[in-house]
Length: 219
Length: 122
Image 1 (cartoon, each protein chain N blue to C red):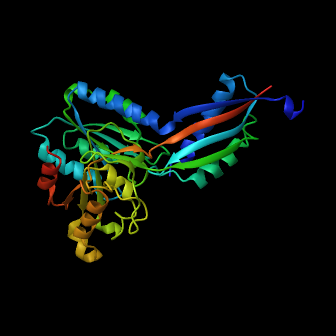
Image 2 (tube, rainbow over the protein chains, first blue to last red):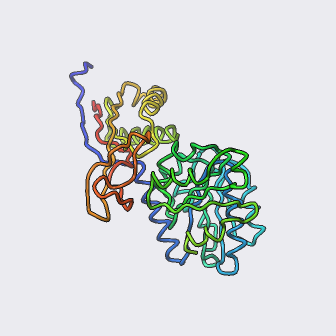
Image 3 (cartoon, rainbow over the protein chains, first blue to last red):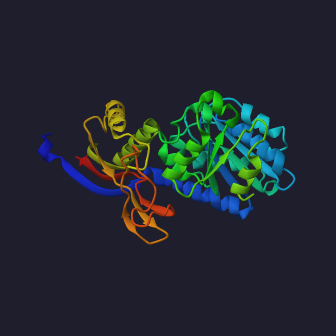
């Protein structure tokens, strides 16, 4: 058969693969709203102190809210075990290979939680300042956690995630002078990318800044 | 960074499309990637060429990639249009170019879009 005998079917499409995630995120949001659960997507770099921050928040807020936590990691259940010690209901997601959570994984995870027993849900994303920005999860707020130990350029090198977040936490301020990193400069960089972002300086180890964070999150 | 999983989604989608349309194979694929995604067109192209060669339905196909600019709407002054880039930042600065407000809504730029496919039927 010669190529000229081939019939060509030329079709126009509008198939957006990232939209599929956004639609699932809307379903997550609807499910959460139906059960009056407020969800916060905690994004941030590896080792920046996301789990420690959730521990401090759970400690401070467990009288006011019934707290749940979904932990996302490539492997292990270390983080959810840590937060469970503070009385939170937890579900671990192990992504195996993916470097971010997506709405589909969160939809499955919230199915494992009894949402009637929760009114505040922390979703700890996989440590990564890149991919999570492209995958909204349906949470009501997105926050991004970095720490001074990642050096002075972690904000300007990852602008998109700071655009996505409403609060930026700059952690480990107790180590700032040893690192020769100015946390205020990191906060300024975040504000430059996203003028609406609220910035909070914390030391999750001793609890400094946690009250300010609770205020910034309007909790 | 999630170029591999996106490329695999695309390949699975195209193979399904060949079946649904009773086609023999695909000759051309046109996709558009929004500038606000973290998807690198060169990596997508490399992965597509590498993986598609394993599938007879796709092995002769050619992938064309174009970029889609970021488009925003300002909730303060109602400006609707492109988001200019800033010299000091490697990417884009997220405020209204007209009034400077940060209260903006992204209308375009978040896509990984399949726009057009040419299938061979015989």
